[in-house]
Image 1 (tube, protein in one colour):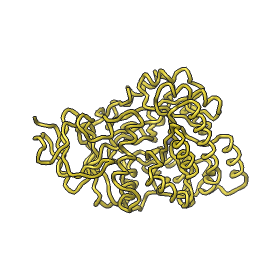
Image 2: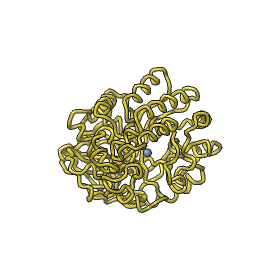
Image 3: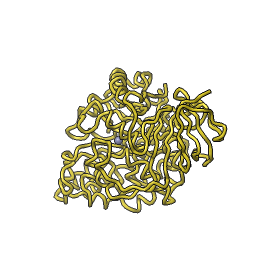
Image 4: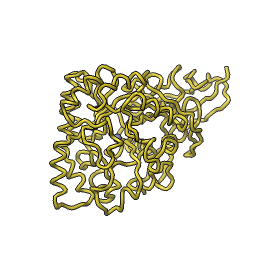
Length: 459
Ligand SMILES: [Zn+2]
């Protein structure tokens, strides 16, 4: 047998540990994982000596928003950024124009973006009181999971959020009864709109309009109260709840307690909550604005503990591209700036740097960004594993590579808003990204072709 690709000399990383082995891929699928000297001949060989070979990394939380405002990002620029960042599969949220809230729109979106995609992708479907009747059809059509915001739409962007927002608790109960029937994961943006109405009004009333005001407008109680309610609804409906972008230890504690009681609930956090605090909001203003907001140093320390002890299940980027002119000047009006940060290309360098600093181990990282995402979203063992029969997705990383972040070198169209990472020194970076046996990024250069990426789902 002659394989299409053999990766030899590297150290394979799984949640179980590290070992020296080669990987052979043919026709997009892993055909052998064995000693280097037992590898078959191959048309292409990668010498991974001194490097780590991870299962292809899955980003559980991405907003490319194509079709939509393509100046912010399109599927090609976004998946080029993903490939550059070492990501082999991205799970795209339903926000777009139109947002994914019917089975027909889901299928149309897949057909539209697949020809532009460098990496594999799954598509979330929105679930709210507006589209209760469509929920099971969207699951049947191949949705990877459901997404609901417990808030109103971002003002001015209502057309991007149809079928996604559900602040009303009674309506949410009905929505979760439906998503429970599908068996798919139901990912929730948990901030309580009623509490936000009070806290944002207080923060806006004559107070400062600088970055810290954003954190004051959305204090931890807005998140923690919503998480508590979502857990109660999950327990009552047996929906498979995942809390998106957990930013505060109060939410972590509720989720851990609910898990112990047998409730199906998991936690996602994002790199920016692990790397930045309210101080970044003060310094970078709109360029550090995201929802929920960056928290205190103490909250951040406890979030790291939750990552290290397994209470956080997955880490996703929440990559949310905007234009610098939409964000406005650094010292500008924090209220009018849109919330969201880019992060596809910073994700793995940040996490590998954290490994270097001893905050988590490589096997823990693989569990958080490969194995558990694949299991929760129904993609295991096709994705997330290095084993015979799995898709030939690999993320090869160099722990020794050091670079200083420069936003101008990013592939994302949102590069001019990636300011808060600038000047940071990363220790470790993805060196090669392999999607189903094909190299799509090598040494930072994206070499993949649009259309290679495929729509994947639990179907
Ligand atoms: Zn998001």
